[in-house]
Length: 598
Image 1: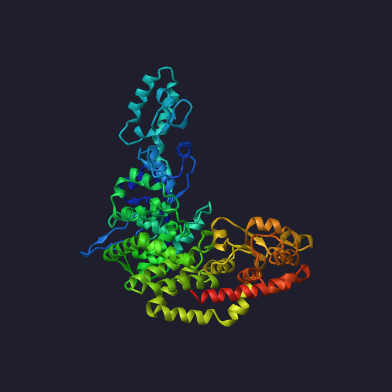
Image 2: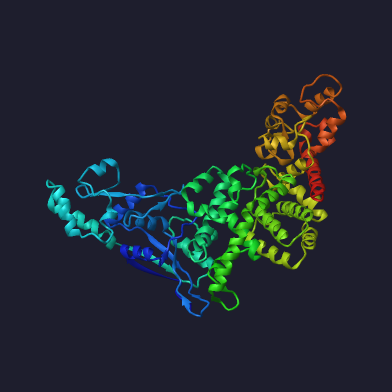
């Protein structure tokens, strides 16, 4: 018989707040701090006052954990949905500080007017107006007596309708006697079931990722430094994008600023490299996979709870060891030397710009591989080659696009039992056959999507080879990518449109080149046979017309480097399909040579 997966109960607001104060419900300060503005807190108070429902709060019971001395510690409830509402209640009713999205600690003071029965965010004008109760937390703290407060209020507002004042102030005092629905999810549920329940219950369709659940578990743990670990993950991902945030943390989170985590990320305050800006989910995933040799974040939820996978019990020793390992993993991820060397390796493969890295899973796994190879003491030269190769292999084969967690898990386990060079060779043999390079990849280039991973791999091959842009004498593809150069068409777009070709036909990867804008303007909408015919004349000292190439061998080299068939000199609209196929084959050949050079 199936056990009940959750229980649903109604509790008084004051009971819920008592649990929060005592720590029975842990409110994790997860990656989204308090994001409601004060007016939304006001509206919540008004809903309670009017007797409107405020939705369900969902908690997930941490399992009971066996301690070292053999006794059992009861698990806390971890709040996984309703954080903003519960935080709003603690702010308005208990007068607690909230941490804003900018990590400022602020008080939100909600005022109430017994005459109009309206709630407002406290202002200086309200403070001077005696008809307002300027901060409801001062009378709802459980210490005030409604009878004596009403007498005090009426003494200060003698002209007020006494019956109306008694009624509205009494109703305000009853605010904490209103009920809220609490859904308690059972401790033995796996994360997939919790996710499913969450999605079904949550009417707004908000989806919590598994990383959110992990962050909740981490942040709710005070015993093993969960708050510092959570902040290290959160702050690092924030600083990677906004280095100026560093001083803010130093000034406003002085306790965290004293930690080793913070010292390890000081280098980010002067860092503007944005090739790899990992979000909190990425930091968490890389740290976890590197340390635990697993790919599924649901396993981390279990490990942080102390799960013994063999005995199916929960043990304090395992929880403590798991928090320590995760902490070590985060130190490895945020280490300046590790991070910068890894980024240099990706750049050395020709992926020099963030727009060329379209899969966060691919770059995350490449960083995991780098950290694991380093931990095993692999030769630095081998590490660079292996990471480059695996990164590009993953891009070309779409390795982590389907079920990334399962594939992470498979690769990590296999790499643990097989030397990496051997494992890589096995995968290449299975996935990069001659048929892949000559047929499958050629077909994959039959696309109009300029952000395609195959086109990005092709561009990386050009960057690695230090190729010049199409018809450029000095400007490289690397320069054009770095300095926001534009992708243009070899068969000009307007030329093809005038011939009646649809968008999907003229916008083809095999018709794309990086090209200086001024050269593209000069080419206009001429057929290749015309503007390249002019280029031949230009190389016979008949004056510069397009760019600066003025030697025939230089022109032929430029076409070769840009994978453009020599037959292009005589091509017009009739030859367009033939051109596309010929160029796709040349691009695939260049990518193959590039891959095996890594």
